[in-house]
Image 1 (cartoon, one colour):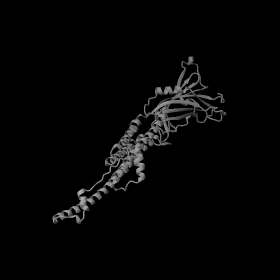
Image 2: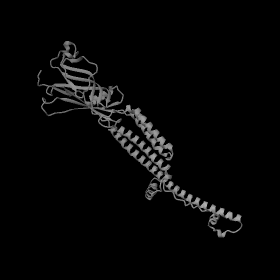
Image 3: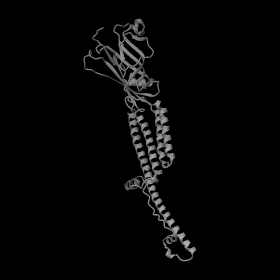
Image 4: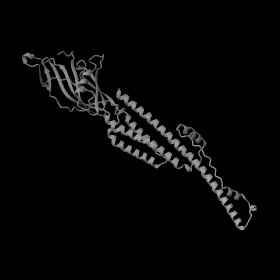
Length: 408
């Protein structure tokens, strides 16, 4: 009746369902029961005389507030309610279901242990605060409690809390539009992703870790690791539909999967290097002194593989053959048959000397090969320790981030 008096719109809602989240489009889909109350100063009657305190009438017969949700991004497909409640003192109660598709700044970095905080801003579309004031009809705690009692969806998302606040502006009421802001906090249920994604990945990386116990010089170890990488790749392709489409940040679980795959590939490359070192050690040049000091003496003690003590093996020619080979023709006495025997012994002594030289050469090569093999075992043990250390630090860091995010 007086245009200087603002109309107070009392509003509250009950969340009936959380329909889902679209990470790529940054949308939250919910279903709410919305209630508006306001005073119509032009309608009243005597409830005693008329016999009723309230009546339902078509909403098209009355003025209604142009309250909108700023984050609304799609058409409301909820059923249309054609009536409103009208009370004898002029109060109007408008209750209607609303399917809200609202924009939300989703942070999926801690997926699947993420908590999303989405905003719903209720305000008039064209009326300023001097015309329409929006007030909260129920406390935020009451709204949260009622919503948790009636909510029916038990899918991926869980309602945590609904809070509300108003921007109290000190400006003139003709300069701004009054708004009531709700913050809806929802948390993803992570059981499905833990069972289907994280636990199998941990199993596979554990199998890859224990594959270091296989003999490094055997071909079965590299074949086993290649099969494991292939299986893990197929697993990621199958489970790709469970992963969220990347929004404004890369989820930590993608880093986790990439880390697992990188560790498997690194362990395969290490196996190839060690296998090549062990199988080709016979063709390598003698071990350099600096490698002998750093790897065999220092790193060998670090990884509990000390250098083996060398056993001196001396090959002596038979005494008779050696003596016979050194004797000259002047010492030969006897018949012609004995002379031929001496010649045979002298020839045999030369052959034994050649055999001795060859054996000493082979023993030198064998000693060099054994040193290279020892280097291979030490490097394999060292990389195995570094592998365990890197896995432990990485997994503990990722788990701490997830736990802190989920507990907060």
